[in-house]
Length: 237
Image (tube, rainbow, N blue to C red; front, side, top):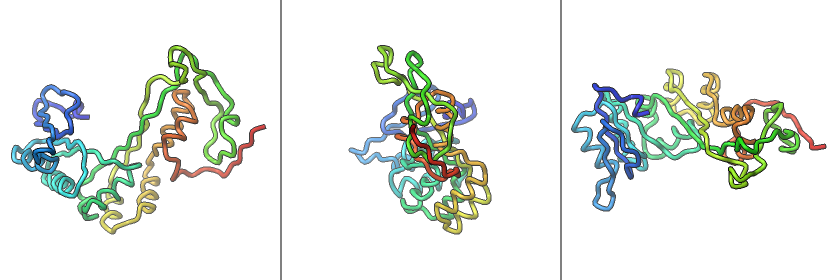
């Protein structure tokens, strides 16, 4: 994302723990908590340089989130990460850290969630019967699915490599009003779905249909909720 945003006119500074990828043309600062140089301390110092874009490696405490929000509200474009299950629960997490709901609605423009799932090995991929893979499944049906048999190429695991599944929540005017009114997660989910939000599970399920990953992998890694589906009972013959 930083590479996409980078131009000759934009000043970008990151705060990371530790700096993992060297990005030419971007000032990257490593956190050293042992000497008191935390995310919050680094962010305060960086704001004095008035960067256009700031990337905070992780929001862990109230000080960091308050400074990051203050930066966002004063014209800086701030990117950061929070450890949560999905996009909507990120809002709850920010409030739990001590941020007022009206500040969340004012400062947050979008939330992007990612999970990594293993890819089926292309060398030993076979088509399998969906009914045989899932017993008593009440979720969305698919015509066919795939799995890896296991071979020397994938060290007999059936998988080789990983791929991301994504969920993107845009905070529009309707959601901002809801957040300011201290709406519940269920109310936020309802509006997000009305706005066309594609959940992590739905994106992952599309990758199952395409034969990229397996049913088993998706069900073990991706939460299945907030999806309308018929109550269908599948039975293995």
